[in-house]
Image (cartoon, rainbow, N blue to C red):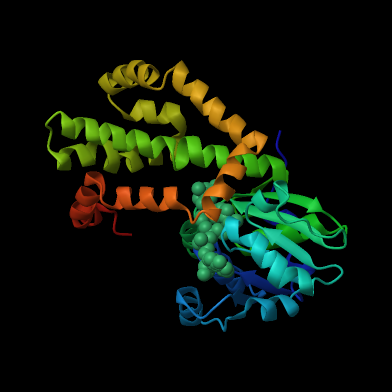
Length: 332
Ligand SMILES: NC(=O)c1ccc[n+]([C@@H]2O[C@H](COP(=O)([O-])OP(=O)(O)OC[C@H]3O[C@@H](n4cnc5c(N)ncnc54)[C@H](O)[C@@H]3O)[C@@H](O)[C@H]2O)c1
Ligand SMILES: CC(C)(O)[C@@H](O)C(=O)O
Ligand SMILES: [Mg+2]
Ligand SMILES: [Mg+2]
């Protein structure tokens, strides 16, 4: 059974007098900075330059400073810049100012697990990895909840790394539901496998494939959109609240029979084999190598795919239907 920590296991005392530098003010950076500040902790936002993130941080009432300045004054440095950028920020803006007993904190284990960052022994290295997108980390917190997270300690120089990880997890709201203890290896590999084969890759491609198939067969794109894309949230919400069994009980017997039989036909053993192949590629480090190479080339594959998605029919139809979708959302 996994080790789960909740509010009773976490205490701010261990970090309440520490200076926390948050590097990056994007998806997670903004959520962490706001939640930690609302939790009464001492947060400085450190950024590379005066651009969009800088302006957003100022608008949110922070007084952002350049990365080196934030690091020089910090006891705890939290890396919330993109994974591919972290090693450069570490090498140029963190390593020169490392102090004995400093904490290096991550929201995903990529750079530590694949040894792109190799900190000295006299610092603590730990992680709080929210199992959800940054804006949701903020939204749940504001409404009294929190997104569950994984916590892991890679280096425990102080002997108190887990206590500090739990305090930060509490500060972002994650101990409200609870946090699960893991390792950098398990978090890194499962996070990558999950987002590629399921959350960001597999499910969305299945949605787009179903949509485009219906359109190719001559059905109205608006009808196809509500069927294959918009309703996904409602089905997933029921799974979220009541499990797969609960979802099957909420749909018709016709949907149960069709879903059970055709689901296994579409997502067949061949798909399972390819999910496993993709997972092994993460585990072997081959995916990490491939992604670093793509990033070093200027991310042409990502840029092209983003453009393709932005110009796709499903995106166009989704944008056209957004007002209608908004009108249907519960009002409280
Ligand atoms: N996005 C998520 O919901 C999510 C969820 C869990 C974990 N994580 C992890 O959190 C970390 C941050 O990811 P994110 O998605 O929040 O990042 P992001 O892409 O939203 O972060 C952007 C921030 O980094 C800054 N930045 C971008 N390029 C930079 C550069 N070259 N030099 C310095 N700063 C730069 C931007 O100005 C911005 O403030 C990653 O380790 C990621 O794996 C993200
Ligand atoms: C939000 C996700 C997909 O769970 C996260 O892992 C990420 O990399 O953005
Ligand atoms: Mg991820
Ligand atoms: Mg994730």
